[in-house]
Length: 208
Picture 1 (cartoon, rainbow, N blue to C red):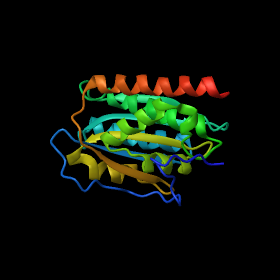
Picture 2 (picture 1 turned 60 degrees about the vertical axis):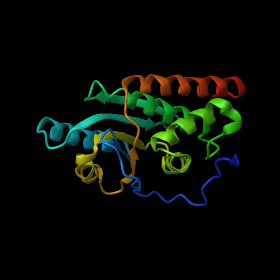
Picture 3 (picture 1 turned 120 degrees about the horizontal axis):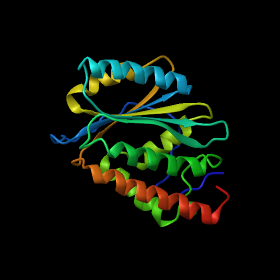
């Protein structure tokens, strides 16, 4: 069963892709690279490689996060690392948003707007303004299976290509987005508040 919203029509296929924004980004832009891996260990191995490159100053990460989809289909936040105190807070909000939007809807296969109510639409709109739109969320929903993991990385634009190369592994699926707005640490708190509202509204209407 899939629930559709006319404002955000569902995808007709489940192809994952590497997508670059066509717009010219500002100096404050960050590159968001999301990798989907077959297991938590796979994601952690990649993260170890990224941490080594960070120490060697071969790349300059802003923040990273690992999410795991457990056998019951629930997303769990497993690890968050902020490398940049000023801009790193955004990863907390992004992780919370993805957990809130994907976990309550595992059995439906698409974002359940009637379950999340207005908070879902507000959260999706906010994410879309940052560069992660509804189509991307549905793509993530369809691509993550129980036992798989998601590695979220934020990086400054000059290191985006190198990060893409490092996160790419056999069997990995990548989603690459440019986040144009200036990043502020309190933006992460804003998204966490919205994510909590989504889960709260869903819990009132279901057995999540």
